[in-house]
Length: 525
Image (cartoon, rainbow, N blue to C red; front, side):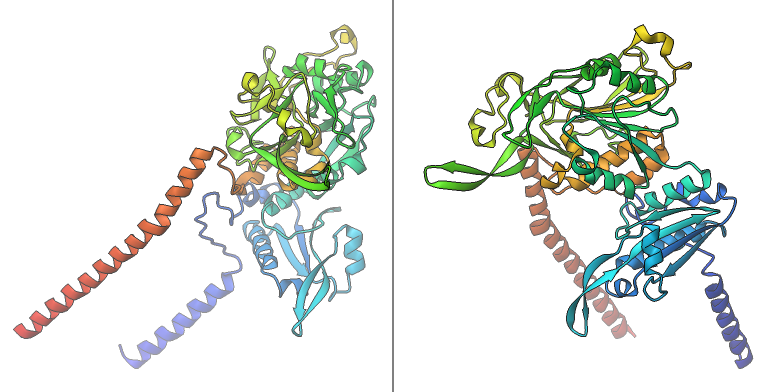
């Protein structure tokens, strides 16, 4: 090759490099070898451009102080750029610092929430107010993700809001707090916030109020002792007309705000209505060896003491006790229940019924003497021998449900339509007590999944389940757990060092053989 050819080759190489650099913004490739492709947006998100008739603008409002001190904003920005790269020009992504752009008031008016972190500036810790939220705009409509600091559900949050905007179908869910002594904003504030952050417009509905047929889904929280036939008629009318409902209902009332005294609920009609749909909620309490710890004060002759026990009434449902074939519990992260009642499925003809999650096989019941005081733990196991076994704790049903009020047939919906129902034998799991049990993430994740399934957003639910993360204590059987620990110990302390030693031996041996062969060849010459 002469000098001119070398010069031309060098110029062409530089030109190819520059062209590749220029088009790199329009080409997107990512090799994602994780089991669930958690670092790559799903096919649903990649194909959103097919539904977009005008341009969608995604603005990521993030503080520069946060971006330079934490790696998460970079990961969020990467995911947003992937949306733009797959959108064929239909999605535009912007990134702005509200402080630098003097937009803090406007950003907060949109609903993006400021929060505080500790950063290091000039070698000194400083509390800084930062923003990390997303505004999505389409035509004259807008949606906001108030706080973004995780990639765990970000794709779900983005795609569900984009779809809602382009289809002009607001995400809405109704809520009936049916226990007279409970209130939505004080007893279920965590759930209220989680639904808001997931993009749902929450519509509180009073018992006995007409439920709109256009409402996609409804949560009924409690009510066995408070909802009579008048109240229940409106819920039944909604279901038989195609409405979808989650029932969180107790078979045994526990005075969680006082003495923890418990008694069977006096059913005013709700449990009978659920039985008509195919679910018996038994007036019993489930206790399980897989339980949360409860810390409480006890008093004896020496004074007050703080004690902590494994409290079997608070059930820690593990991943392995769920139904992986159902969309709600696919890649289930677990859930915690507080004074749960067992369910029995007796679906009428034409109704499909599936268990969502179960207790362990070592669970048992209290059916007569309901002892819930942690100071009386010695009496918890009185019925264990007679009632031990796996218990159904939650179920999902679908189909055209028979009305619980056939005598009011003339007032029934003109056309019966298929509905979806979820029944969980516990009301408290959806309440703010989940914060006390540190169950917030698991319980709220299940409730958001339930809202999605009831709203018939099955593909959105599949997307939310792509990144299910397991718990470290997921193996509850002691023998299996010890076997797994022993296996991991053998692998890490024996097999891996042995593999490294054998690899080193073979590498050294191969080099020695090669050196000897080269030496003999040199002598032969």
